[in-house]
Image 1 (cartoon, rainbow, N blue to C red):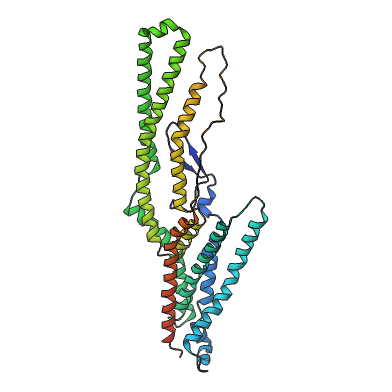
Image 2 (image 1 turned 180 degrees about the vertical axis):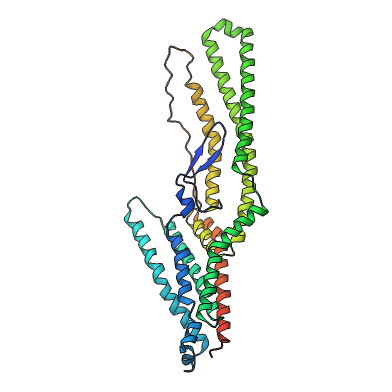
Length: 382
């Protein structure tokens, strides 16, 4: 799941035993969903740059920096006051849409949030604050290192494009190059080839069994009823055996494919963590229980459920067979159908997944703010 466009449904089939992700709304793959994460990641991060690109160098060009420091204002207090004041102003465009989202959650009667869900929302808001703080401190750092506002704005816009768009996509390209994964079409082709092989083998077994009926004394004595019962038993055993063979082979192919894909994902994620935008995405999705790990857990639960469902459906199919041409097919009873169960990830597990992203963002804030602080202490105000 290196793509932002997550699948909207999953198709579970019996014959080829494949679990395929079906994207029902293709436009998401092109434009992406318009949500609060997208607004914070792109729009508000750009606001953070616009709030800080002239925080220091703009004061110098206007002459107010020299005038302020001439009144014996310590430089450390000046930059701290600048940082706090600008950051408080930046909180307004973040808090307003966030509160609107919370109000909408409380309005809809079908949405019921537990205490753990509210805690997750609070942690996601913390990620938003840290993410904007990264760009805020980057803006202060660049503004304290440049001599013109135009240069500061150009550098910050370049850094913003690199962080938001370039690094996440380059990390995926690099992971594809260093850890290649066979396409899903190649895997499905192997599954289809094995399926044809199993079907040919099943046809041979059915032909051999049919030829062996001539010498079966039970059928000669019992007549048609014994023949129908034996045929049902044979079909059920054959169907279950075919399903087991297909499941075993496809499980091997899926395990190999998933192992290579996970290795590629981990490599891409680690490379993209250079970007605060990727840190925000991975951390927020983990806390919201919509991340890559939760998606993998759901697919694994589907894979564990599939053999149980396949055995049940095969049994029902055999029981519903009626070899009397003049009789009606019996209606199968579906009340005992096995149910798929999935337990979402706990809050502690989600937070442990998001903790590396949280730590890296805090380190970025400390590094860039210390760089801005030290640079301003040595800044030439002339």
